[in-house]
Length: 118
Image (cartoon, rainbow, N blue to C red; front, top):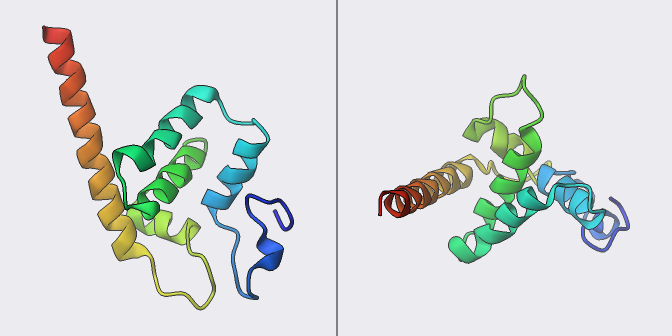
């Protein structure tokens, strides 16, 4: 985590926190995530351009799927993505990203349903 090129936390200012999107990056780099999962996560930036937070939220949701005791609410997602001890809350950005991700998922489901009905 500290020196890996994908995360390089050692080069970050004092007060930087380990976030779930960084943990995801390490697991990804080590090929420790299922291919079908990484394919879906990798697809987010192309489907939701100009929304880096949506990609981070997707990574956090992916890792939190294994944690049954922690609801994946925007508040909890904002907490596990909080980048620095002195940073402002990410909650408004995370809420907006979750909305965009939900809209995108609904579009994909509608497309799949249309294809099945044809």
